Image 1 (cartoon, rainbow, N blue to C red):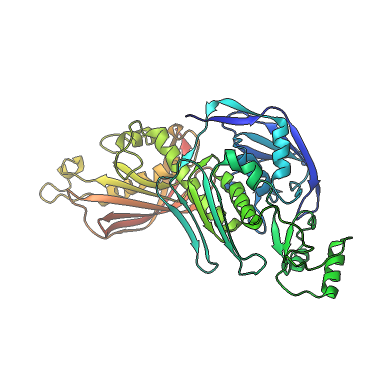
Image 2: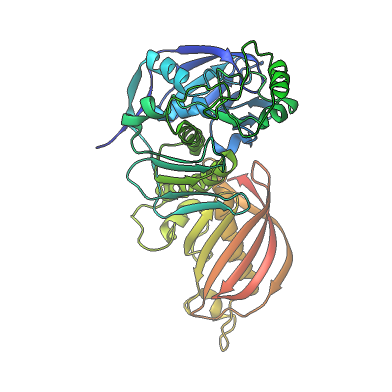
Length: 466
């Protein structure tokens, strides 16, 4: 059954204090058109700058996910983003009159309530999902962090935490259905921190808006009453502060027996929204935080960009381990016989890397004169094939690539290591060394025959209008 994109029926607002900045902020949710996705608008700044909620605008992951564009930032966006994607809303404009959404009670529930009060409506365009075909894995052995995406028909999250703390222990949770579970089972899960962290966070200028009403504090050391009084004064708390029997500061009751694990899944859900489209995958996470979440999101976003490129240029459903065939390449590149020297694109990581194939046959026109009795592919054409593969990578960094052409400006460190003969298959690998928005770049190119290096060069190029 096809699912359609969603937005809200009318604006809705929520006002509160930001967790880390302590700034009072009013968030206004507004409907957005199809294919807009989610964006933040700073209404308190001149010209109301807009920041798309995507991986390319993540600028910091310290104790929260921060988005930025130029000098403009929005801090701690994960809870509000979790509310949006948890309700399966695709298109939304989030206006703020300050730099951080309110922390509320430390969960996503206040945002969920505001969005539900606005009403959710379907739009007339199908959702554009990204579906994982093969496992994607990120691991940080030093921190004992693992997070992976596996193929699934819908979004699922399984999360395990283990802080080796008696009050917290090992916990896990599993989200199977956003529709059936998100609002009641995950949106109310509050953020948490450890007692020993509070003073350190305060000294770093963070949690200015934090309090016992917006966070679960796990007691992980034996603070005396004198230390607790210092903590009380540090945060300007009026209520009594004590280390409770439950291992939670002031014996604050939990909403769920595994509330910390559920909140980590909530954070992950917010970070997954930064892919820029809804996701179909089973995410398995162990001790993951924002940095690891974002690392996996980058891989998922690259997968999405690859599929966008394939769907844009590839007419027929491809069979085999490649992205673009010769006909698709002709839609991108202006070259034609006898000077189109790339037959297939095996892989593209946008703005980073391309791998392409040139099949060298005896029918190549250059073998007529180079050389009739000893056919060898001219070295300049090996470099040209390399450059064309790099051009495919470069053209996919701009809008409307069919209206552009790549001009190569220079070659450095050119070396030929092995002759290329009829029947050889050249594997062309180009890695971006430097890239400037607008198209100027430096690439390191290598051409292989099997595992043998045939040629290499540093290529300089830029994009121009046709």
